[in-house]
Length: 408
Image 1 (cartoon, rainbow, N blue to C red):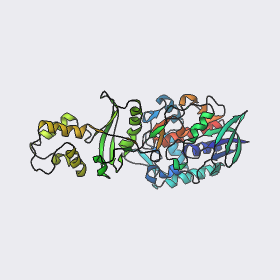
Image 2 (tube, rainbow, N blue to C red):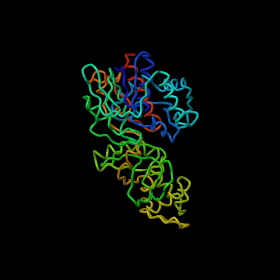
Image 3 (cartoon, rainbow, N blue to C red):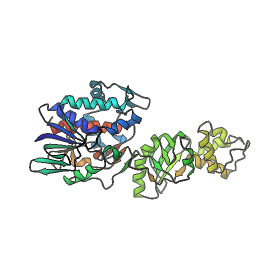
Image 4 (cartoon, helix red, strand yellow):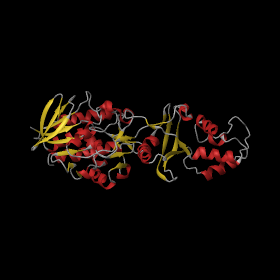
């Protein structure tokens, strides 16, 4: 009979196992993971550097469950505690201009190796590949079953991840397991922090590699701005990516599912309004618009946007008609992008949706419907912005669930 079985050894699962074993040295803690190589998501995060957390993390950086519920969990193991934890493991973190915190080595492997050492030192029995097919409640204990065998456990922590980056092992099977134990999941499980597709042949796809700061907004069918993000946008052969796109993707996809008239609108000149740009174009007094735009935009993009507005970029002197000028202003500041969908789970960094936090005791992340079960990490209905926020949720929720599972 094992005291605690942790299902999933990603960021949240490793933290939960470490905290459980540290808090109860005499308890048996087994962490199971179906992947041949542990920590795939950690290794690819932040371009292989692992954005461990953010300098300042608040509940408003997350979506899904209520901000108040998310805040209660984050406060139990906040950014300062995460920094102290990793520094204790020998992982020094540095703050970049964006507020993101990375290991000073700029290597994700530094973070993963430290976690694996901490798990070993704490006495965690880490078994992989050990895929869990089912978790059932039998009397006062659980039975964890998979191709590798059958385990009995007094308590179980589900840290299976979501559906994003399925090659890492998070193929969504955790949702079926948690539902089999009496929980619900949100009606929709969809991609978050994901690049967006544009139609084949759309002019943006010919600008592969061009990046520029933009303002993106989700606009309702009535013209109301529902969400807005600013940051870099990257033009790609399939559509758009970059921080601003990833951040707004879940909000656009969620709103568009409910209302097909919802649009994603880009302002290629953040800070400019229709009125201010119109005045600036008038002030050119016959000089070509490129004279103004090439100071603010990559030249290839500026030319392409002018072409979209029907403005000839080869002329030295341009007398813009009012109609043409207004059209150029609209293209530059209020261009709806014909998004055809997300790029796919393989490229999504996180899953939106999951187990609602209202079904968990927020002090312990213990299940309110299945005694002895704890739930943490991405399987919860919590997803954050880019910048280390989702890792912070993993560390915080893993800490709470791990210690609570052994009564600490």
